Length: 249
Image (cartoon, rainbow, N blue to C red; front, side, top):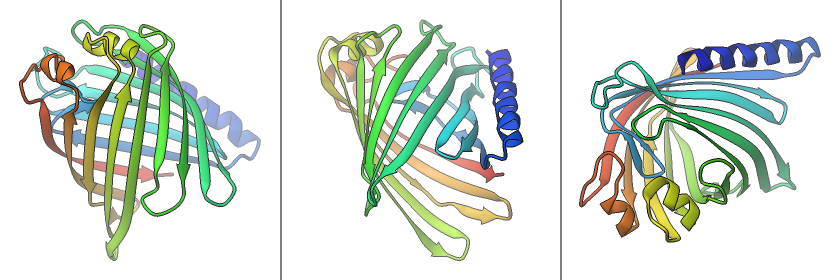
């Protein structure tokens, strides 16, 4: 899987180089994050410390990137291995002065336990440039969970606290149909799936930004709470913290 990440990074770099040859305006973002857990759509991918890295390129309205989650402990016997790698491509633009939209595709490579496979989704999102920045995205699975649908509604806000220090807050709710829930949870019902809240404090450090953050995640469906992936619990609610380092170029 690491070879796939390296190959994809090379492809992204080549794409950026070709585009630069045509004088396109290219922006890049690099992130390196530590987190005490990795929870994805309410599912505990890792209940111990992880390192997460991402590399993105934006060319006008087109973005593409790669992101990976590496386990730092041997909780799942995956120490220093990437247990999930995401690849994505997205096109986004505005509709008028307030409304915005995006369309894209994602591929998830899992390398952990029974989820040792790749899955792909296409998605579309619609949002508003206004207070709380409401956004709704719908993801449609085209692989293992065919006809699976996951819809996520999110609000977010950011503000400056002082020179070089800010505050970022977000909250989201996810809903999934029976096909998606059967593939990921073994449940055959449509249901609201997960709730997530996050608070971060970005601190400017020259060309880099350091962002300590805390998150809370809760599963909303009883069947999912009983079948909570690798970490079955009667109360699978998660508090976890992390710190991220990012830069743009």
